[in-house]
Image 1: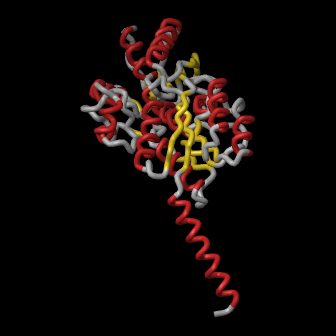
Image 2 (image 1 turned 135 degrees about the horizontal axis):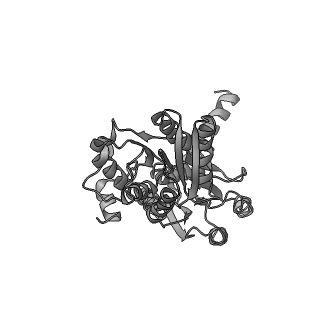
Image 3 (image 1 turned 90 degrees about the horizontal axis):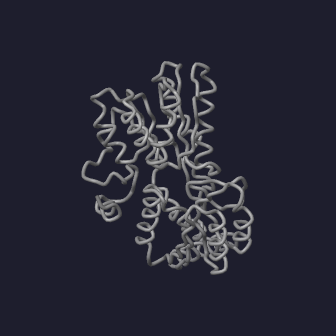
Length: 332
């Protein structure tokens, strides 16, 4: 056996030993519950926890909660750095404010994985999300087609300053700007919340006698929009929604009355995917730096496959959780 062959065998053997060692190593991972104020973010965290439970022999998790507060998120990540965790998974509530802290984490040798939200820098090791610009475009293109390219619409956004909301509206606005027959009567931030969405639409209905369509980022806002239209005794118009079970149930109930919609989705299983990618990084395996998934959509044709009549309205359709796990999280 020649020297070159011996060296090759040694390198391969060392690699196998390293991989085996990495597979047996237990890691400490910091997980930032960025916001628990709606059922989507609750299910996102539940997906992560379920995945961590499957890997409990390899993973210890330090959980922190930021409650949608950027300064608290920074403080929480600083604490995780002090605890010398191996990796941090976070959903940035600001595209800029966290950058210095994430730089500090990486300088300390900590892997940084962004979940479902981005930052305006390259100071992270991996990102797992859906293309939110495409998310906004998908609903907008459907709405323009339903309206025949002309009419008055209102827009319901999430939380200003968060990349998810800003990017979705950016994508939608590109579509609307390319269709001069579409007039946006008002664009309101309603935090993906039912009550805020209903109130915003009630106000817009009172101020505008003719609204022909509703572009909504989803959450529970579209349900609020439907209820606002019905309370004002105005005919329902085409609306975009998301894959929330409560919304899907209402859409199904209204289909025979002529209500039309489309539901775009940001799967909550991104939470479990983030942990899988983090473990690959820590094990030294190759992992894509940016995992940006295409936008799943639910149409009238396949709506019946996604509605879960026996599950809570709070449930989100694109999940890796079992029905039993969902029932444990969301009591009807």
